[in-house]
Image (cartoon, rainbow, N blue to C red; front, side):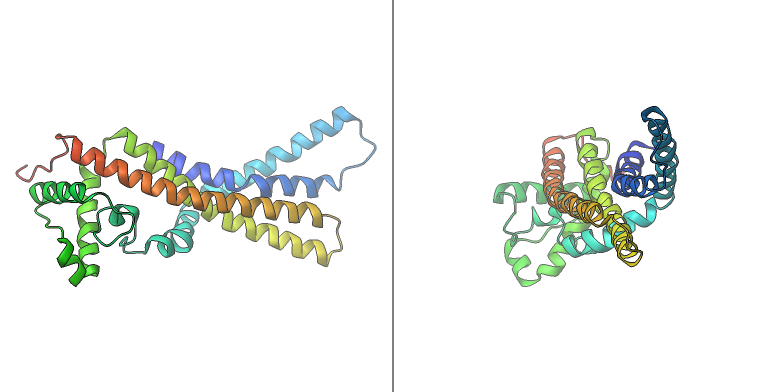
Length: 242
């Protein structure tokens, strides 16, 4: 398992299962005898938490691809579009974007892209005439830029962070679904865990919102680092003759 797989796919599954693990443990403790002494209770709680943690960890590990795809479908594609035409890497060098780089930076990137890959990015006037095709051309160029900068560890750190928060959002979806189901069961069976479950749900929603905001921030930080690395390091040149 490589570093990206571990940080961007496995860790989000584990992090997303923390609240369900705690809530499951609290529910199971309800059936423990109340007369046990402190040491026996401690051992018993550990013996409960460990299997629950292993179960959710194994479930998350097994479902990590499903969670990653859920994150893309629910969060990444609506936010940045499935064809990547609204990704930060596209917006930063799109003339009509409100978050674009400077005019000189865009020209420098366009010149290097033309030299390295033979891809001609649209001028400002051309983009105004055909904005959709201009964005698709940028997406093609960005794919090439990613390939030649793949060995940059700084960029890979951003990439792993982006993957972690994106996939954690997918894990949040299933964690929230679990808590909602637990709430329904709680009220149907007239149990006494309403406050705990509602607290867990609110906390999970807050974590999801924070992760969503961080996802956008990391996306733009990665995009800036990608273009800066590509334009400033002369070694990032596509070898067309090899």
